[in-house]
Image (cartoon, rainbow, N blue to C red; front, side):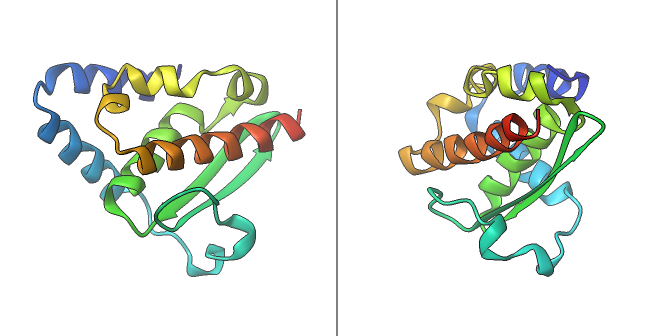
Length: 135
């Protein structure tokens, strides 16, 4: 787990109310850098998400990096959390991380709709698949 993700876990421990957590996830998404429209293409689109989601991975020196975007505020926030969990991490660690268990530490697993949970799984599968192919 990255120090950045550990910070998110600590922040969520202080946010008792689900609505506060939800707002924090949305704020994290809003704080992400702008996403270039040139990346909004079929090759970067993640299937299995109710909203539009794009992930652009990059592997450099055995480490995984990515940027992403969504047309849904909450999903953009989930992408921001995934960035903190996986960006700059060794490929092997990306593949071996149980991302859903990490999200459970935030209590998000209990509050996401079935469609959002499926979309989150689709994003994680894309990330881990790219990492595995580049090991």
